[in-house]
Image (cartoon, rainbow, N blue to C red; front, side, top):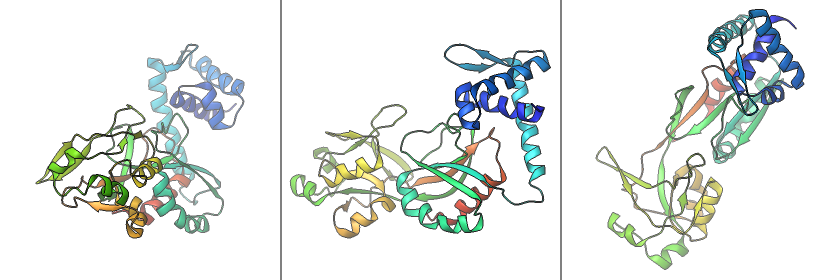
Length: 294
């Protein structure tokens, strides 16, 4: 096996922290991946990876080698793409379902007309996605980014609103002031990472405030969040874009417009260490140009 290929395999194993995941991501048999890493270690005369039955981790030498590999492979890709456009292949993208449905997928035929040899694989999940571990090329994320290992390109923001169903307001009354919230229920949205229910918020005079709310149901997906609100189980705070149709039809009603949370930032992110191909660069540039979020 040539050295460049072996370096690419080592890079994938190091990023995935798994021989099996790397083999699946690369479409190679696991023995091929294992032999490639062993050949690199034999050639260098050092151990690059610590292997246990449960995980794979980098040695000190492996960390240094990975940094050099990543730099070299990125430069090689840049050189190969100097005089050619994006070549054929697959791009793996992850984004919230609502954003995919309302914003990106309706415009996707434009991208595919520009690059007909590219296959776009879209995952739409509300849970946290490990870009490197799951072999995702880039993701569109809504909210504050806390992972400093990601390169982030901000493309807009989403206004948020406070809404509830007519049936809910018929039962509990319509809140007209913050003090009224003590007698109301909220549908709780819990983080897939921490499992913690997220609080209600509002922004006033440059300061964010947290509002404790009672609730009888907690969910972890956007669709369940909206449906629980429509069913009268409580009020929600949500991006206006996601509930615009329900507001227009009267299925949901906005309340407390003067006390909303701050808009949510929308970003396209990818890993610092990921081998960013010309295909992915083309998709990132296109997505940034067509996403209309406010």
